[in-house]
Length: 249
Image (cartoon, rainbow, N blue to C red; front, side, top):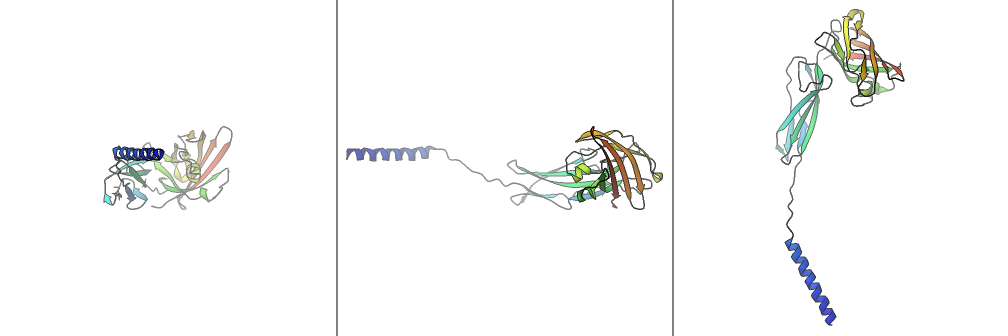
């Protein structure tokens, strides 16, 4: 009987200590954060004529249904401008960012294309779709009608193409940072397809190697420009032929 009393006393003591210890623990507060919602207003791709104003459609940014402020930045994909400059032909990625009161951010992007469409008689500037062949082969639909390849005019009077391989790697294969830039073309006489290539030699930004433009053929009637480029990887020689079709904007 004494043993049972001792057990009861011990049990009551432990229960009391447990209750006491629980009552001494600090209360832990909790907060609810609402992540910012941000959606584009207007189109995901916007075309802006060279030299004209860009009317930014903006975004809708809210936190728990209440409108909040947002910021906007832009960078030129090919010509590397750190702002959206409608006096420079390029594809720009415009990034909108909204941040809630707890510091959590959300972003959304829009593509803005600043363009000039040449007549292919006096100018080959423009936005183009591309169908590319390598060593005579176009493997699949991914290599046809690729969007977009750009040709712009530099201040020195030369033309330049955004990817001398016609989008083979960055568009068809979707490999980031795999274009072949620096493809400058000096139009001695567009009507006779007489070009020189002061940008040679070039290199692919992802794979390396030595690339050289070899020919440009322009057809104003069909709105097509065919660009030929050789690429020596060090072990293999590839010949790219890109048929560019000018988008009529």
